[in-house]
Image (cartoon, rainbow, N blue to C red; front, top):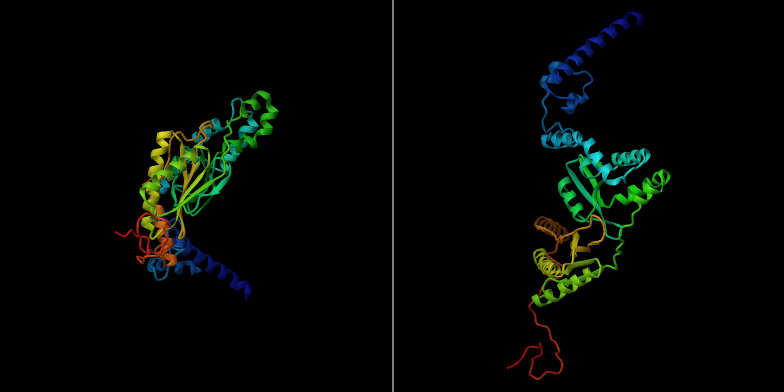
Length: 367
């Protein structure tokens, strides 16, 4: 009995496989590369006939978020362009990071490092997320809640600080990058090869850069109700700290609303930039942090003797301020508050001490 059924079963399975192959060819002719991702109903079918394929339609009631497919032609074009120029960009970076007359072993190590950690033009993802930024002391600090940006914008921000964009990982078409000085890390990787190649090569690679160590960071915190006189002398004091190689944090921790905090902080930054241009104090901002308790801008002085250091004053632009305002408003919306304090019009009793005129219990002058 089994002997007679076995050919029949084989014939039946081959018959159904023939219909399955025909359905696959039909879907391939429609221009779909993965036919069984079209609909969950199709994926649950063991055998798909052409008639069933034509009857089943993709709709939102039978599909979930995993089955949806969106095609962006611009991202594909950018990725193809980056892959096309990959070899030429790699050669440029090898010439940039390798010293003259470097051995072939060092060249292969650097090429492998660039494949594992793409830098600048080697990043093929159109969107990047900056996670860490290296300060002038060589330590990598978290960048805070920065919004995703394009590779070009990240490269502009990195080159303004004398750094490069280094990709550390990739997920969902977005690259996670760090802004840092990569030359010292690459030279540390090939130090043994350079030493084995001869003293002339190792001496050229180990040319000491002028090490300008940063001093202790200084915080300048104020409220959103300070007057023009306070901003005038406070901004001058902040620029003096930057001139003495102190990284500074300019922030507001007590504010009535997100708009008032951003406006007052921008006013302070404008005054700082004016004093810095007058005194030729080169510095740049590293990040703009915003939370429901504080809005702050971090500034770092520029080591002008160091290679690839910033040569101009870099302050937050309109895009950075708008992103900070939206983040601050979102954090305050989650906390259910408009600000950190509420201004009341109730007068408070105060003692002015010995004065030459009469005052009331609230410190107001009486005529």
